[in-house]
Length: 124
Image 1 (cartoon, rainbow, N blue to C red):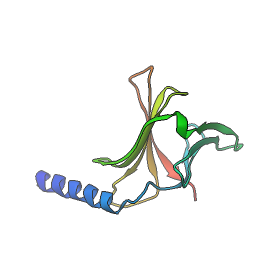
Image 2 (image 1 turned 45 degrees about the horizontal axis):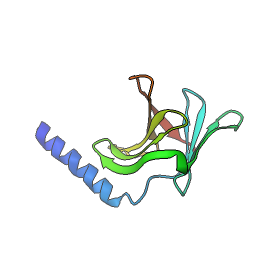
Image 3 (image 1 turned 120 degrees about the vertical axis):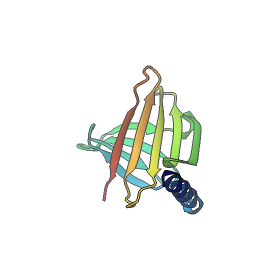
């Protein structure tokens, strides 16, 4: 039974990858840090303070390294390393039984082995 479920899950990920033309665009809220992540149509990413709207970080494309979009067992993953912050960022659109617009955000800082991982909620 476990093997059947594993095969079905892998098949679902592959099918999702076939239909995923691009990564979702929009605004997501990280309630742990009151942060607003905005992913634009050109895959530009900006981080704002969700309370006052002030810009915290604009991730310039020319400073992104090892940028890629791929389908993994977790779902559709957009990742890059940003040299100004010394962190690797992962935005994950997970494959879920009940689909929603939320993303998983994972931040991997260079100076520690402890990653930050949080479910960020789509802002309607």
